[in-house]
Length: 115
Length: 116
Image 1 (cartoon, one colour):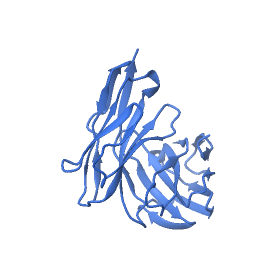
Image 2 (cartoon, rainbow over the protein chains, first blue to last red; image 1 turned 30 degrees about the vertical axis):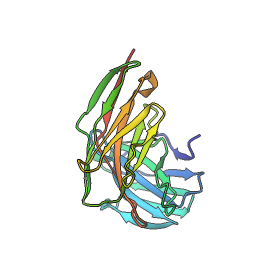
Image 3 (spheres, rainbow over the protein chains, first blue to last red; image 1 turned 135 degrees about the vertical axis):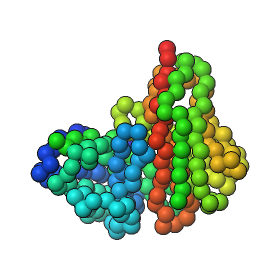
C-alpha cells in the first residue's frame, strides 16, 4: 500500500476516443501532480494542484484536461490524443508547507498507448 | 532554469558489491533539496534518500548513502552490499526550497543491473 492509487494500470485508446485517468491519494496531502514519463527523457511535469487550485500548467496541449474535485482526487481527461502521447502517466502527491519534509509520493502509473 | 544530468544510462554491479551512481545539477539557488528515487519494474517511484542543501552532512539510509558536493553541484548515490532487489531505474531530482515552488526536476535516469 503506497498511499497513491492510479487507475487504470493500462489503457489503449484510439485517436478519437475520450478517456480519463484517475488518481487517489490516502495520505492527507495538499498537493497533487501529473507527470509524463517517456523513454530516455526526464519526467515532464504536466500539472500541479495545491488545495484543489491549479498552480502549474507546463504548456500542456489542450487535449489533456486536468480536474481536481477535492484534495484526495485528481483526474486527467484525454481526448483526440496523438500517437506521441503514448507514455507512462504518473500521479504524485506531497505535503507542502511543512518546510522540512517536502517530497513526492508516486502511484504506479497508467501506461497509455494511443493507436 | 535548473537542470539535472545523469550521465550513466546503465550500470551493472555484482551482488554484494558497491556501486556509485552519478548526478550533477545546475542551479543559481543556494537553498534546495536533492533526491534519489528508485523505479522498479512495478513502475512505482520510491524515495530512496533526500538531502537538504544547507546540511553539510551527507544523508544515509541503511545501505544507501550520498556524496553531496555543493560547490561542484554533484550528488552521487552509493549503494553498498548490492542486492538483487536493488535492480531498477534510479532518478536524481532537484527541487527549490520555499513555499509556492512545486517543480521537482528529474534527470533521465540510470538503469542499475545487479548480477548474481
